[in-house]
Each structure stands twice: as structure tokens, then as C-alpha cells.
Image (tube, rainbow, N blue to C red; front, side):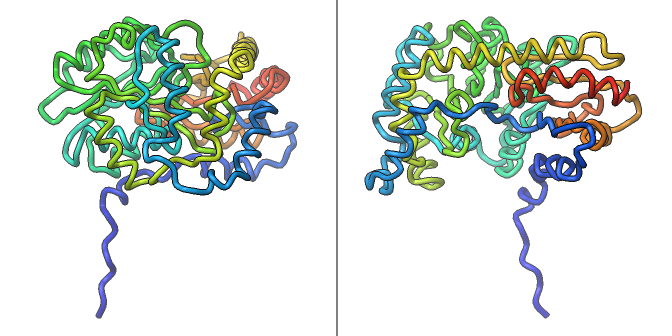
Length: 389
């Protein structure tokens, strides 16, 4: 009698991607409260710039885009991105330390695999972005929860992190502006974590996917040059350039790490998708004013969302910034999933339950307010008031 082959237990123990479940709730909505307002997935709520689309079309029809490219990405994009980061942070970034990845999710997967092995640990801010947790679970790396308490604005504390470090720890991950809470970590907090990592011989993996939606220099790590061998920083072109379907991210690391990253990239992707690389290289400088206008639009959306919840009984915004808000609901004793499911059924508003992002979050839901226009966000007030509290 034959036996069933075994599936990798690490994969079996990894949570199922949660967004499809929430989207299934939305498909059951009957439209009674008006058009669905989808605040679940972080996607740009406006199209790419017309000239970027035109360049994407031209590049898609070029024979060169159909062939293999360099493992670490096309030189034109690596150089353009390195120059942009150097200018933004006031430091020097060598383009040869830049790797172009198939989205920022892959950039984190590559970084985790480059610095840790099964049985090691990486400190993960909690609440966490579920794909980060899923990555570590698949790889057999312990995701050691670094608490980001609500009373501290969901910003992690470096002293608490120091207490979690043991001989298995290889890195600390920070995500700022944060997904799911929206919290923006102060520069001094980021710099304190970098010093901790340098002193304890760890990597600091810094995910800055949403950095273009805040003003000012996020930190001084690159300008100082003191952390070149400690810092691995990740970025996504999806949100700022409105091209999530083209799957482009970036990873910048010290030369010794970057050399090893190439092995992982060659195994996972051979090369990142090529159609968008040259157009995005142009857009980094060519669409500076457009990106700033989009940042201001997101600021307007944030203000509209905040105003919609002023004085609504029982509802509370516990954190907010860049793309997201972490909303506390008033239904004590009810699971967040049941509240979110009923909210979409009765009010036509789709958010994500807090427990998608870690334990102890039944009172919260994540709201991707950047997805919706100002008029939709203003309509939230009436819908939430009718839903109750």
C-alpha cells in the first residue's frame, strides 16, 4: 500500500495568505450601502503617469526586454536608484551594491536567506506585515516578536530589543513607515537600532517601502557611513510609481552581502522583470514633481480619513501615517474578523482584521486609506455611524 508523500512541515505551518479571505467577504456584499469602499490591500489609488505608461509600452515591444538581463538588475536602473538614494540621504551609495528584485517581498526573502539559516532568529516588529512572518516561517527562521506597544505609538523600543537578542539572533527588521500600523519611526529610534546591531554583530534590515509618502530624510545612517556593514535596506517601486503588477523592488547592502545576494537572485529569478526597469530609471528623476503631488494627495486623504472619525462613538485611530491607519473598534468580546465581515456586509467597507498581523490584535483593523479618494473617505463617516459603536 502506497503512502502519502510528506509536504515540507515549515510550509504547512506557514499561515495562508489572508487577503483572499477578506476579498471573498467583499464579493458577498450586495451593494445596499453604496459602492464598495475597498481599504484592504495597499495598492495605489490612482494610475501611473501617462508618459511612464507610454515608455512601458515601448519597452515591452522591444526585443531586448524579452531576453535575460543581469542577475542584479539592469545597470541603468541600479545606477539611477543609487544616485537617488545618495541624494536623498546625503551619503554615497555605490550602484554595484544595489540589487533589483521581483518586488520588495522578494527583497526581504533574499535578505533573510542571506543573513540567517534554519534555526536562527530575526527580530520582527509586532504587529508585523504577514508576508515577512510567512517568509521566516517557510525558511525555518524564528520570527521573534519585537513588541511595538500602542501606548508608544506602535514604535519599537531599543532596550526591549536588546533583551530579545541571543546567540541565534542574526538581524533585526524595522518597517517604517510601518505596515500595518502606519507608524513612522523617528530618526533617533532607527539610529539607536543601528548602533545596537553594530555593537551586537547583527544586521539591521530596514524596509522603507513607503518612504516616499513622508517628508524629510528618514534617518542619517547612510550619510554617516558608520553602518555600511550593518545595514540592508529594502524598497519597492510599486507604490511610488503605481506599478505593482510589474514587480520591481530594490535591495542595497554592503559589498560582502551583495556578492552573496547574487547567488540567491540567480536561483530565484535569474533576473528581475525587464520591461519596467529602463522606464523606472527615467522616472526616478523625470517624475519627481508627479511623485510629490501624489504625496500631497495622500496627505489629503489622510486628513479626510482622520476627520471622518472625529467624534464617532467608540472608534479610535491608534496609529496613522503614509498609507495606513490602525483602527480600534468598539465591539468588545467580538473577534476582529467578525467585525470586519459584518462591516463589509452592512456598510460596504472592507478592511483587514488585526490578527492578520499578529496575536493580541482582536480590537484592531488595518485600513489602507491611500486606496480611496477623498470623497470615498468622507463617506466613511455616515457608513460607520450607521454601522454603530
